[in-house]
Length: 144
Length: 144
DNA sequence: AAAAAATTTGTAATGATTACAAATTTAGAG
DNA sequence: CTCTAAATTTGTAATCATTACAAATTTTTT
Ligand SMILES: [Mn+2]
Ligand SMILES: [Mn+2]
Ligand SMILES: [Zn+2]
Ligand SMILES: [Zn+2]
Image 1 (cartoon, each protein chain N blue to C red):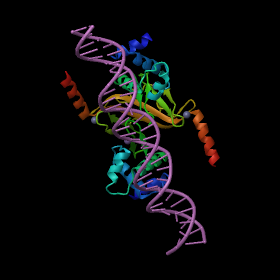
Image 2: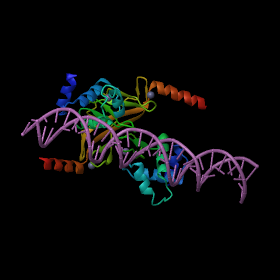
Image 3: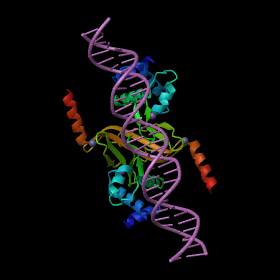
Image 4: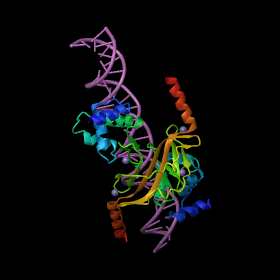
């Protein structure tokens, strides 16, 4: 818990009960949760928590590079407490998101393009996890 | 225009006045427009056009791999009539999206991971275009 | 202890997207 | 050509994630 406090300070974020709880949740759950999922998970232990606070806090985390906002899912934003460079897999069936380690491609990816200043690079895979692929094939069969 | 008709048929999409107009717009405007932008652009020439039709049609295009849906912008979906593999740059200031050619990284990117079946691979850069970076620096100065 | 600043909260608004049923158009059979 | 069914389009209402905003609370400074 002291680690979280330190992590926030290192990113110029003043720790508070809510901020610590949200960052602690982000870093201990590698599921890339949505704001809503974080709220529902923390609400029982922090009954005064407001959903607005979750949204506000996540925005602060992202602005201070203490967390990543993933726009891989067109329905809702997902958040990642791991800011190291890695790719993501998004299942079009169930919506789960997995981390995908990526070899060093600094020689392939650009850090500057023409007059564009790059601040973030994202690599996303989309497809179907094992469970969802099986269900999909089963439905295909039923049709034929 | 005949080209569009053929392109749609090749993707098993029955051409209609609206579908042709939307695909024609997508392929002739490399701006990665939103559904709303497409609607506003086509409405003058097709006054009966419904925004629902634009959404429905774009969904069909994506399902048939005749267009790409970009989730790079957390505000709204953008669409791309170019389905060849390329990366995108999204300006966090003005929201413009540029195509970024990408060297062949088939050796780096995966096509199969564990039990995950990949159907799409996306590479996104985020940052600031020249104009927006200058505005941003100007505002910084004003503060200091 | 009082005042100011920062943070949190609850509610209302926003805005993109979807659900749905009616209207229109297209395709096929006779 | 005419009738009927299927496909497509349309308009409106609903959904739902996110944000705006102002009041309440907590923290910091004086
Ligand atoms: Mn991750
Ligand atoms: Mn493109
Ligand atoms: Zn799945
Ligand atoms: Zn810009």
